[in-house]
Length: 310
Ligand SMILES: NC(=O)c1ccc[n+]([C@@H]2O[C@H](COP(=O)([O-])OP(=O)(O)OC[C@H]3O[C@@H](n4cnc5c(N)ncnc54)[C@H](OP(=O)(O)O)[C@@H]3O)[C@@H](O)[C@H]2O)c1
Image (cartoon, rainbow, N blue to C red; front, side, top):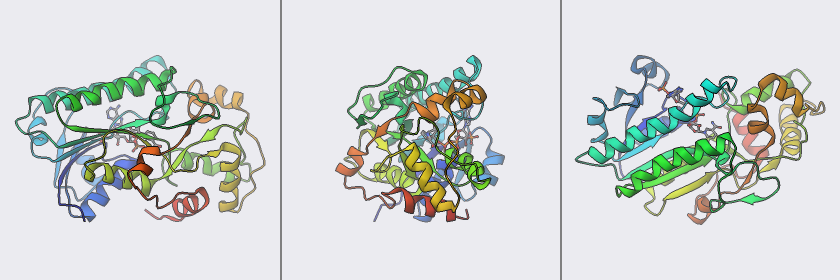
């Protein structure tokens, strides 16, 4: 049983944030939503105790930070939201680093600090890793997304210097049928033209949304949790096996391979980074903490994600 807490969530209107806030509210926690647009957030994510307008600059929002036990920072411009122009790459980076810096600066000024800070990150931290299994001790990569994660985590780690227990969740591909990578994969399968993304041997480290939220809750509640955690299920799959399983679950063939260079032509630089040059990440720290995955294997995870109505 967890103690009732007051939890501040940024990015509460996003895929992970909505699911997290619902679970926090369901277990009796008081949720404080930090959002760029409180009116919209109230509609998208009802039921929070407070909706606070905030941005990456010092402001009135700092008072609300002093009232909470935990901060979960999920906000950031969507990685796959738009083509990666130089301006959008800067937005991807700065929407994470500057917001994290603002939160930690406010913690430094606060009379009362939260006891735990959970900050989002990605397994993109490790850069392209081929077949090598990567746990949380692996060094960072050098591509654009790795640099974003390194800078983002660097800002988050300043909270640890203030004595706030700090956790970074390096998330993999979150399975959801309405938003994110899986949602985008569904259409070709539904049109009978689904298949692996070539070469197909690249690893996809995925996690069911319930486990992503479960791991964040565990990191809020468990005082032993600190530092980076890979937010991935224990059995990553090669893309060709992921695609075959998805086809089976949907009752559709997985036969038409999608060449990586075609994706690169359509999506630009983000295609290799998000779909091809991936990581075989393993959740060593979650397992060491005793976190029990609700969905440790892919097929039941996909069946549950695709059956979900909300
Ligand atoms: N989903 C995944 O598969 C995955 C994988 C790896 C890492 N992650 C990381 O986990 C975090 C949460 O993921 P998610 O999928 O839930 O994200 P999401 O659905 O894209 O939502 C992120 C939230 O961030 C805020 N936001 C959007 N654009 C912004 C901008 N330009 N500047 C500042 N804030 C902005 C929005 O909240 P408001 O409008 O309410 O302010 C939005 O609801 C993200 O930082 C993401 O990078 C996710």
